[in-house]
Image (cartoon, rainbow, N blue to C red; front, side):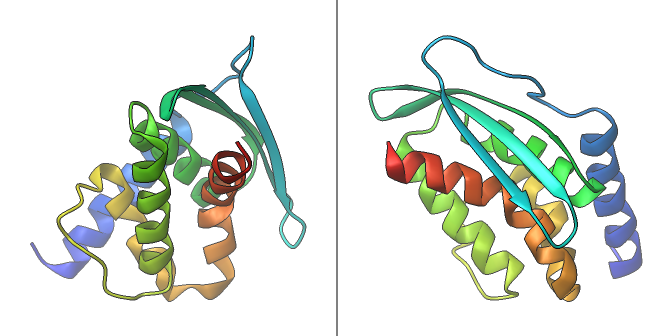
Length: 143
């Protein structure tokens, strides 16, 4: 597939997550709540996580922001549900490497997250893409 076709496909995946976000909402009960914002652009997110032992049982988000930040939140919640905390944090490390344009272990199935790799070419948008991931890291590391 040519790079132009791949860029178009990635754009479509990002817009699909933006227009039809997965896991949008708030978890009740004894869920962990993390609020974060990006003051430079106004993106904000409230991430709620339900943990059972060392496993992320459920994840939901609410927020406002650009298509990159909201689609990244949608993709992240999909990716971490059902994973243990260590794997979720490892996935966040890999995502950070992708955003920096660095090499990463490609034995990890990124799914739709791969569509965000082009963001690395736009430094001003990296904070948008990483906002939800930073919220997840903060919540899991404080837990």
